Length: 361
Image: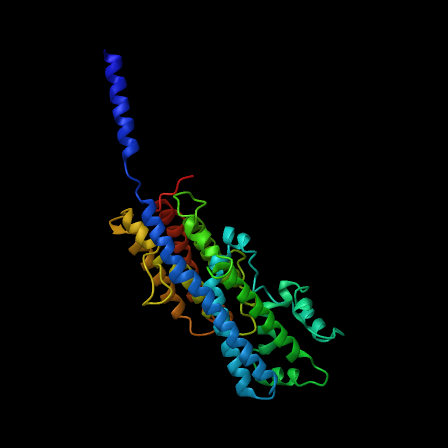
């Protein structure tokens, strides 16, 4: 009798356990994923395409009037806008997403010697077929940065002189780089959009609780992006691990825009977390899912603790009023504060957020 009573109680407990609801329902995961897909992902690739189109327009304008200082400055501004757009969209081209759509690396460090060899080569024309044969370090946004900023701390005169040198084909190569960038951004939007290859449908359909789901991949991409900002964008130039500062390792070594781009790359992670690309557009993101699961950090909602840490990093970045390479030398404490704040954010995302999203293996 005792045996059957124990068996009965075990069955009751097992059934009760099976009926316990998941901390985050599949429908909630689907809702968040559809919101992020429509409000953030597709908008990011649309913005990238628009920025690249503007860059092409102003590059053509400058090449046709390459002694015009004002046109060069406008071209630089459009280049900055394009890099920011790339930073905001590239978080969706990492991990599984990048493999699935064969994502390019549009801001690989520039190989300046190779670029100069190409400009001075006997190649008859820099057509799309030729551009596809080049390494990523000879194309993309960093190659454009090198051409329009030069290596003289952004001084305009040497750049104007180089574009107007006898026999120089810098203008033709600049236009080819911008056109290649346009083809790449058009391809990315086509691959993701419903009107194209429709990868956005696969993205939104993978809404399960597994770590391999789209939400899991987004979480991994958030973690890897924050790690990259911390270790490569800030830590390496600061010399956090080497003990000696190496300001030449900043990302935007010719344009002096590294702080601006760190800010954008951090926003790329934040937009996934809050489910919105702008202050007026969006739905619940991963923060909403954490609230659904009643995730806490001590007595505070985990979503609020993470948002507060994002704010802390942004505020510390705002205190740096000079290019990063100068701040590392003149005020390394400010840069160290950013590095340490990024470390705290990384821990909250990698450990607390992932635990709060209740993934299954």
